[in-house]
Amino acid sequence: MPLGAASLRQLAPHAVAELTEAAQKILADSGGSTARPELLRRVAQASADLDETIRHACRPVDTDDGLFVLRGLTVDDTEIGPTPASWATADDTAAEWDVLLLLLATVMGRPIAWEGQQDGRFVHNIVPAPGHEQEQTGASSTVLLSPHTEDAFHPGRAHLLMLGCLRNHDAVATTAASVRKVRLAEDDVAQLSRPVLPILPDDAYTEAQGFAGPPPKIPALWQSPDGPTLRYDPAYTPLDDAPADHRAAYDRLTAELERVSVAVSLEPGDVLVVDNDLVVHGRVPFRARYDGTDRWLKRASVRVPGRRSRPPAEAGEHGYGQAVLVADV
Image (cartoon, rainbow, N blue to C red):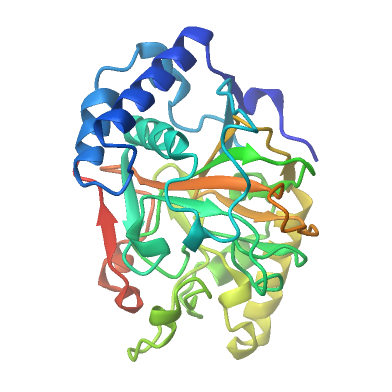
């Protein structure tokens, strides 16, 4: 199913120019490096002065799709250089896009990073990597990346996930499905609202996978003040440990998410913004060439101060020892 027109937000040319000029100035003042501590402070200062049209384009999700695509930014396919062989070799390639995403993220909330992922960077490079084709991580390619809540194992996970497209020659689709569009029986909702199973750390967090503490059991669904939310990652949920009635309810949730799933083939310059409390996202399989022309996304994560979309019990979880870094904006 394609994405509805109501979830497309077009940035005006003057807004694109303002964002681009701000990003270029910040990057120049930082010597071309996104790793300098002062860069986040400069981003916060610049974002406070951005035009109201940009703020309106970055308003909260307002459709049941639970996501939107910002369109209008541009990418020079030659200027950005070849797709990196892995996130570890990307360094500051296409660094202007790191700053663009951080500007947009800071308008929406507070950018976050993880000590245990991609060296604590606030913007990640999502590229296929040799030897990781079959993993359930962003480095995979030939396997279906199962729909999931981003960083579902952790109570400090993002409220919003941003994916900026730099290259997508093969029109590889990102999949997304909103809990606000599923239809479940009351018994299934009740079953999935109970804390029966844990969600374990994914393969991007090898240090967390060795954490010694007992895995906390969590509900897959929760009724927030604004409506139903979910926390879902079947690839890292030990479903075989659940009673049969819970597994059956979980299977029906999975089937419903498949039914309402949309496919978003991002174009260079598009920024997909996903509400991580409402929407699970994934990716269709593709065959990587590893010749510098493969799909290349930039990813940023955002927490929204004051948002009350999660069960209070999450505050007591250990997060498998993983520390969240929050931009001081």
